[in-house]
Image 1 (cartoon, rainbow, N blue to C red):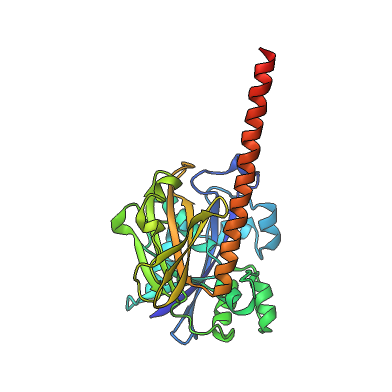
Image 2 (cartoon, one colour):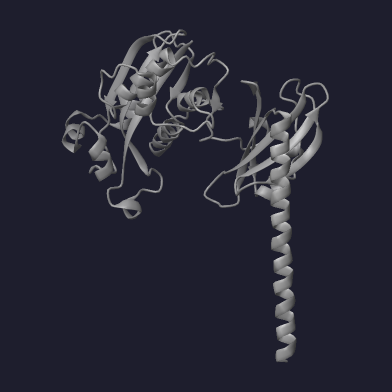
Length: 337
């Protein structure tokens, strides 16, 4: 099994949203990758420039950070479909080995698939696991899991900077160096699921124990409210034994995209469920759900409980003010008759 650490450079409409193609807002102009063995040693490299089709002029911000310009892309770039097919063939190798993608952040994999869809290419496998090295680094080196730019991570590890940044092959190279020299621990179980594609029905749902977490992905639902009618979404199973827990805190909304809930397994303790609702199409209502369940301490449980209580009090106050306003409106209407 091999690791494919890849990085992309992309361009966008130099005139802003007015000149943006709705099916491909970010057009890939460079693919760079390194192939690693199971000990994270670099065994091969891949690099292609892509001749742009939509945005032939570089956006000012993009042009400022790249090491090449439009003339180089026009002269040395090849069509995206050719570059992407060569990349995917290189990933598999002559022996057609299994491999995992690794990226610095989740965006590259999403943009790759978006560009592939634009050219009606075959889709990547589903569900798609990959390693977000940026997030793994954050979990190791920050207290709040805050992510950092690649160059900052390289500086923190005091890695030798023998290549310029902002070239896809070089950024992939530095990401691979972080995997090798960053002492990130046992990475095997730290994969995440790409959600560019999501389950359309029960058959495609994801249910997976990894890295001390039970991850479930469900879809597609007509609305957030419909999703919360599905017992699979609101039930909490133990991230250790998989058995259904007893509810301690029912799902409550903390922001526009996330609900929290807590259940208790009598063998393995309290489990926190984070339920994230993601847009499933261009519709503002249709959603799919990414749910993660993992053990929490008593202190964390208390924090979640307090957070629920504070939000509940705020809702009561909003409701009280609303009723008071309505009563005042009715009184004023009565006086004016």
